[in-house]
Length: 331
Picture 1: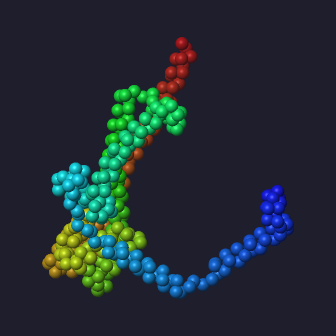
Picture 2: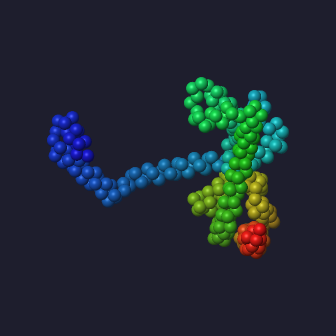
Picture 3: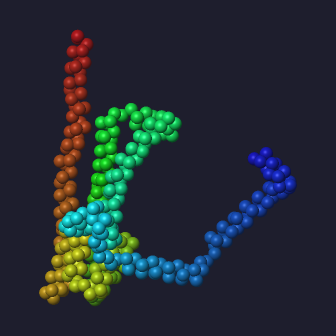
């Protein structure tokens, strides 16, 4: 360190003591600036501007809640997108269950699958070509493994990469949709309780859904987005029954289908919405309790298989091991 300071002082034409003093002064200045920023009161103008930016971002989020109409594939893209409308609709519903609400989500997903299915084998062929060069930049072990494979082995690798590139996105989509449904299912009872309290407090059903969606925006953003999407569609002129049924189809959970049916029947026959919400919440709690009991009753059977697979070899060794050792000593 001293040598570095001496070299720096010679280059700058100053003494070592001056450099040390300047460093100490700079350190003290940085500490004072840090203390000032920590103890300074926040500027209210900056806070108001930040609040305005947050409200604008929320407005943009609300505008993005309306699901755009799906686009028909063009002439060139018809070769990649599923041709049958039934398959295309099922894929679009699965993408929306996973949270993808873009108008071209089906096209982007299909192109990604095709790009991976063709790109991974293409990368392997490129690596095979590079590995056969005299001065290959690949590591020696990797180049030797690639070059040493036979033609049948290369075909097997290419087929394996093709299958991975085509089916891994499908698996990822299924897992993402299942994870989103699990988050919605775990948060829905709390949202239903808040909705019931809001209706009992005197709010209308539409106002209650908007209020609940604003309250659970951070804790359950998926349910908040679905509730707000329903209200935006109703405000745009769509019948509430169709909006609720569309929400239940997009979520893909039986609890949401039952919730949509309860709301529709209550509004159709003029029964009390608060009483309907109370009855449905009790049934939902009973269903969750029965499901938990079912999972608890399955545990002994699952544990018995694991314990048998782990303990049986040890028991066999303890019982037969001494006999085998005795016979080995005799012969």
